[in-house]
Amino acid sequence: MEINIKKILKISTLLIMSLLIATASATVYRQMRLTGNITVTAPKLVWIEGEDADASIDGSIATISLTVENGTAMNFTSAIYLKNENQTGFFNYNITIIDGLSSSEFEIAKIHIYDNESTTWSYRDTVDLTNTSDYSVGTLNAGKYLRFTVEIKAINDQPTDTQFIIKVEYWP
Image 1 (cartoon, rainbow, N blue to C red):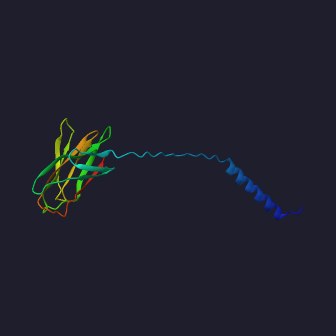
Image 2: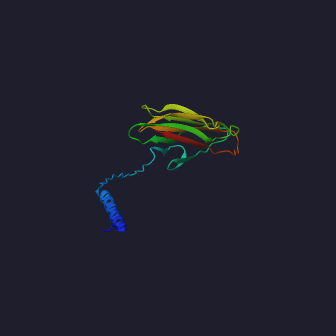
Image 3: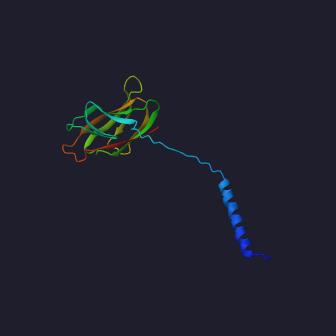
């Protein structure tokens, strides 16, 4: 009997392929999944209009308009408020001056900060709007407010620098 090498190679190849297919088919694969849902919430510190300054609020940006008389110190005792709307916990905050006022145009330009952590408003800090390195840090508990009062005394009839910008950064 004559041995046909070609037939043996074909049969061997078929046998090896069958074994590989059978091995792959016998492997049990398992899978796991991760599904995520994202909830977007409103900011938990919110601006609230005060009683004695014109304010407009658009989300996290509040703008107040104050009218003062030259040479007269004016106090706006409830210009605007910042409220922690959380039900529990607190926020740390850092208030800095981004754009200040000129001390050559304003003798007094200050924001006084009060909180209602107790039953009455308590003085917390003062930020001098003519000093861009001035700042205030603190914490605000859930459901509590910061009240911003503004004290201004202009010393120039036609000031050129009349806008200030403060930034309030906060975190849990």
